[in-house]
Image (cartoon, rainbow, N blue to C red; front, top):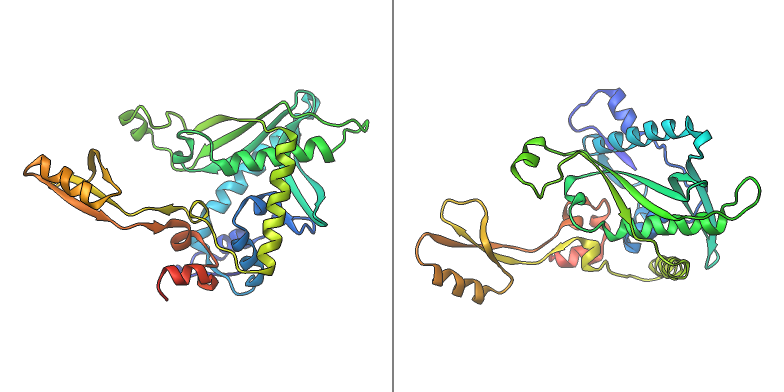
Length: 294
């Protein structure tokens, strides 16, 4: 990957965000890669030396790595309590070497904890499915591929995510009771049966193998697709009125007509958020180019 510096940022900053601290220890795929889009993973490898990312876009990398480093250091000072931090575990699936590294695990209690530095939006509702899948596959590796010093199999009795919200706002928390009230949230993750973990892992490896052999497409969920909608707003207002979002244009027009004067209808085109804003390989993706009409 090529790191550019369009803003002329200080060299120490650029070097800091450019350093590769992640080591997959020769794995064909990591757990993080396997749960992500197979098409993106393949294209990243194919165009690894062509991808360009500006240093200004990697600022969150420092936040995440700093948080992980501090928490890991604290965990290592608590070994007497049983905590183990940052261990990579390997397995072989469909003839391919895969691996995953857990953040924090306590063999004495069976607790598995994963650290996340993300947005406050991720704290709302149920935990993202990719978090559930990732942490459960790590639990599967711990149970089946990692032994204690005495050679005993390990147990995972609970999984939690420690979410640190990088964009948390105290003002927003005061204004909105549904907004996360604290900048940290401890989230319970549902435990999968080991059979479900094995099936999921095998299916993901097969899909990633398929992506190496033929053109496959990212599904709407992987593209973070947002559908086209029509929003009814008060004239001069910035948000849709309660219940004022419609996927059907005709129904939106009917609802607008029933309200009388003082309202307008706003068209909000659908978009593929990941493709358009967060995918480093979209320029080489045939699916994206077709969707854009290029």
